[in-house]
Length: 307
Image (tube, rainbow, N blue to C red; front, side, top):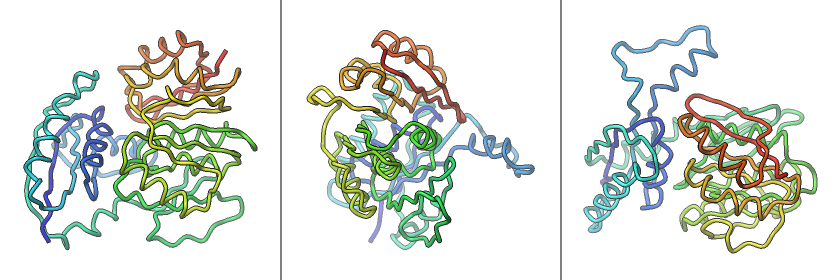
């Protein structure tokens, strides 16, 4: 069987949005190549070999779609949706798209090499379902098959959310995860002690993958729902987490406040640095006090408390 390999040249800022577009049209795998990851590694490791002539301003997001009669239609939809990203304030970069065909054997398992066992924070361990791991005392292990949904812990925005959940989730809390993707943050909240977790995503594929990962991890206190935001909810949570994009955080800030208990926490991520002050202002206008800011690479995560 042949597959369409679609490479999009873009900026760091638009990586997540393009990956989500691929997943929402049915991609069976997405690979992200961001040269700025090398700079982040160089800060942590004594030596990293950086190739000559590398363009640190250009990232590549590659999606794989099965060859089908609808392929041309899907390509047009992907191109249209990518072209609309600047309307949401995202820097698209060149936005150049290259399409080729590859044999299934060339990619079906190769993309798994991008996912390794990850240690995040003090106790969290993310284990891809195809890898073995012997837990150590105190480890909180999340078994994950990213499937066709974004959120594996490898991206800075997801990693920051996990670190902050480890610090802010307490036993017996009610947690809402807005834009749950693979369900990784919902599962983490449950394993860290939350009594009830509501995982929300508007994408049908993400909901299916999240449900599978929730079942795989045995966290029965997590309920996955297909929902576009928080407007239809009438639930007071102790903590709400949203790993999405800056413009959407601005849009939902008031709804988040309405669904939080007084003194409740809002962890908001997916904020590119250029959008920091826009999001900060929107949070304050919605009745939040920003109490913590975390940075990784080009990204910012805020922890806010409802006044």
